[in-house]
Length: 167
Image 1: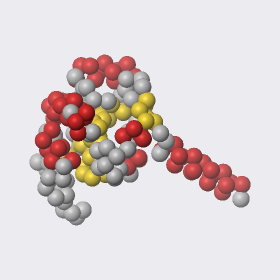
Image 2: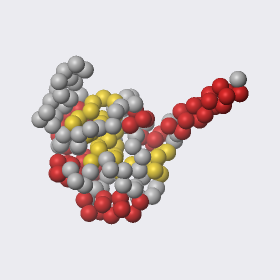
Image 3: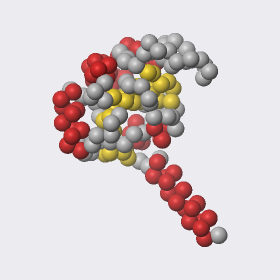
Image 4: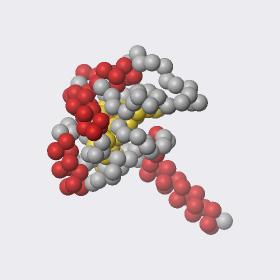
């Protein structure tokens, strides 16, 4: 009985921590998830060794600069899990202007860790994953998904598009 209660309390604590209010950013600050509630979120997985990721960064920077007009939140996730001074130096070298999360948020939205880079996860205003885009994107391709003007999502049993577009 005691073990079952302890396990329940541990699970409850884990769930509360996963939905907790803040997340660490690469610049050493913390961001409150509730600040972004009701806003579309663009989560981009990138790595230094990924050439398409490096080409995509200016597009994401442009989208980030438009946030005052659009309300869109652009967040990066370093695929290799680099942290601390190494990560901040890498962000400077690569010219990344948008916030980068220290912790991978995949458990927050219950999707699998990307296997191909770059991968961009679009979270809608309702807080649910709207699209997962594999391959390099442009500001316009991301805007099309955010505005609902992109092509329809593939059915779950459809084969992936290997040209780096929607899957």
